[in-house]
Length: 230
Ligand SMILES: NC(=O)c1ccc[n+]([C@@H]2O[C@H](COP(=O)([O-])OP(=O)(O)OC[C@H]3O[C@@H](n4cnc5c(N)ncnc54)[C@H](OP(=O)(O)O)[C@@H]3O)[C@@H](O)[C@H]2O)c1
Image 1 (spheres, rainbow, N blue to C red):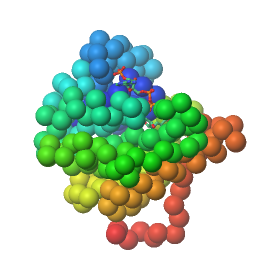
Image 2: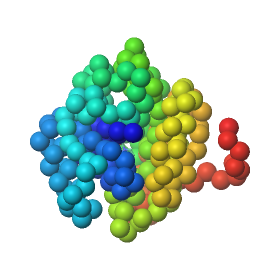
Image 3: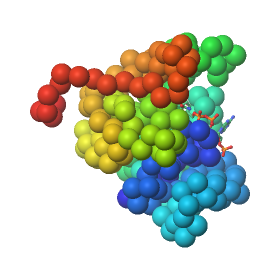
Image 4: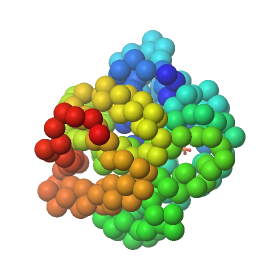
């Protein structure tokens, strides 16, 4: 499946891009400016030592969303609405993964404090903005740091669970299967999209722990759930 990463030029987006490119998935870096996306493609190619990589390209966010089957949003929360408005017409029937987190650092405060959105979570806000578009919203990647995703040479296996929430069970299943291809990640099916309210808040805690323990790789593992699927 073709995967578009909107804001894929930034920290989190690039990490997601690198991991999926390494898996051989067809990946499109999206940006407000196509040239910036193309430059990011060159950077990733250099990083992965594969100038002949033919499963990665860069486009505007709009063209990336048009072409992809799965779209991932990795922009700062203040860019959430304008980015979604720009792609709303191109996501019908597609899986739309929201990785955004409303942290107070986006509004002049601390990165260790969450701020509450009217809709309850960033993922539910995405669902509200994309209402009527036919996109299937899934919340994922919130608790995995960009360093864990990007530092594939130092940390090939990501020691972190990925908490996944959605009101669309089929979409959630597809996303879990896709993300679990990334070495080390185990996905946890958290149930409906409203669970993103709790999951996103954990990101603020993890940033706090990363600062306190002077690392960039702090993550989360849920234990004791057994092997049965919910
Ligand atoms: N960084 C992490 O470790 C991490 C972990 C979990 C979740 N997240 C979440 O993932 C999201 C992205 O985080 P990040 O650290 O990757 O952010 P970032 O590097 O600051 O920004 C990502 C991309 O968003 C676009 N962007 C930035 N400002 C914008 C604006 N005002 N309007 C429209 N687009 C804008 C830019 O792409 P173009 O200029 O190319 O358009 C930028 O490269 C955030 O919501 C964050 O909370 C991050």
